[in-house]
Amino acid sequence: MFMRLQCMIMSVFFSLFVFSGLAYAESELLPVPNTVTMIDLGADACIPCKMMAPILVKLRSEYEGKAAIVFIDVWKNPTEANKFGIKLIPTQIFYDKTGKEITRHEGFMSEEDIKKQLDTLLN
Image (cartoon, rainbow, N blue to C red; front, side, top):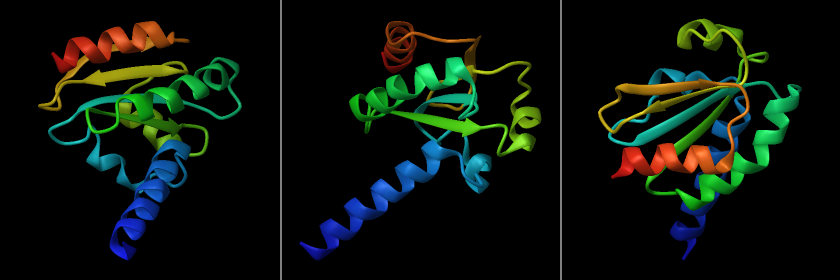
């Protein structure tokens, strides 16, 4: 029981850490190996990014164990913008399980459109 609780706490901590983009040292591990991955590069203070935040939280839960959904705040982590070659925020980058970039989208992206892209990559 203690081990399960400890794993749950670590999972929540890791999820919050990844989603917040705070000192995102693990970005070299992106895209997540052997996992369909969506990286949303934005900023906590960006209006379209704020609109997407609850969508990303919902989809992270819905796709848990199937796909990785990661948010990186490029204002807090400016080197990440250059690393991923983004020109504006938000930018969503989708990778297949092999880590190959399949597509990217600039600007607000609806829940429905994100789900379509993720489902296409998962099938």
